[in-house]
Image: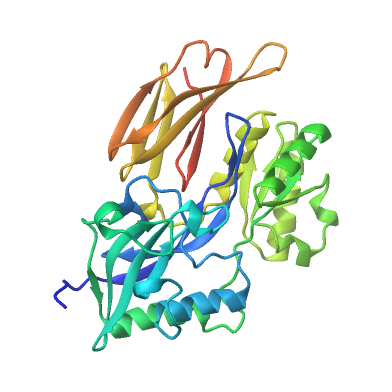
Amino acid sequence: MSAAYATFGLAPATRAGGVLADGGYQVHRDFVDFIVDGRPLLFQLSDLDAVSPLASDIPPAIFTEQVRSLLLETEPPLPDGRFVIYGCPECADLACGAVTAVIERDGDDFIWRDFAWQTEEHADLDLNGYHGIGPFRFAGPGYRAALAALIEDADGPPAPRRRVLLIGARVAVLAKLAAALRTIGIGADITQDARAVPAEELRGYGAVAFGRAVGGAERAAVRQAFERAGVEVAYVSGLAPIVPLLVAQIEHALDRSPLPQRRLTGLVAADGEAAVDVTSACRVRVTAYRLDRLYRTHTQEVFDGVLEPGRHRIPLDPKAVKGESFVVARTSGSVLVEPMGK
């Protein structure tokens, strides 16, 4: 089969969870993405909210089975030699839609071809085919080595530390924040003194979130406790007691995907506008949060649309960013947060 050689690689990726402006929730998922010719394959599929079958939250045996499937060591899960490349991040049900492709051997090479959006047992290439994507020919040794590296450890790849330690004075806010994080798939614990937490427990956290009332000495003590435990974590300084805003900050802190492989790379909020940088065409949602004089929260979704690569300036409603206010920009894969500048 004639197909140009492409490079094949793998990289950690995230489907960012969050509390949305309409009150809904979006589940957090960590997965391994396919890197084709140095660029995430997912980015070539325009605005698609999906994850690969190589997700970190599936049991090791199933993860290994997914890897073996991509190596063609098992039968295709779908008719016509088709494999799921990306699926629904919420339920992985084919009825929700999935990107599928034929994977086959040609000598020592592996070929991915006939990409399609599929919701039923058989794919309709004429109606739902991705005609501008592939076929890709991957040299066998590199392809096998990349996938085999995922299962060299009998227990599978190390799971991301998707747990957060919350420290602050406002217990009610922390309780609501912990509940929201757990709802989207992120573990959360509340403490007033991390020095009392055993070192083996500290090693399970990926981030620490401080409330605004936590002083410098308390923060330094927490950092020292984690240093003594020999674990590196991300530290989040909560911008305001607004749960969706804090969730967005924590999601950003937990994102371990390489910077060159993110769609949303920049956010500046100042002078009545939000400047957003994206690396590939994708849906971007921009939400403004503000606290009024009585510390009541006001939320306004100021933009929701597909943006092309580049920098985009989005005007903000003056009422939405009056006083103490903050802007959140979100794609399916990442989220950025900035306080509104003057």
